[in-house]
Image (tube, rainbow, N blue to C red; front, top):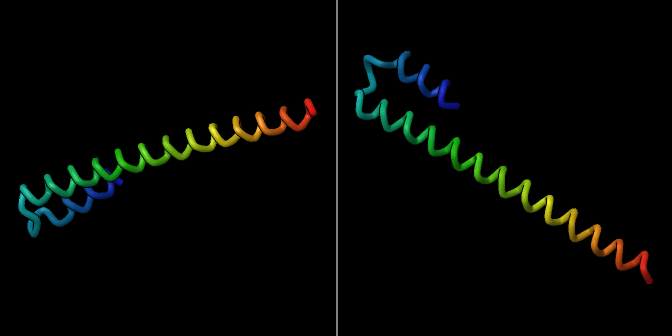
Length: 63
């Protein structure tokens, strides 16, 4: 995503000011970081859900 933004900035360098180009790349990096955080949180949620399912299954087995 950052690479695509950088390529677009280079392709339109005559129409985009350097300040705007910098903002585009910085925002692309922030979006990438946010997506990484969301994926990490979803993975943690799935791991916790599996743990809860196992605990419930162990309770049923022991009865």
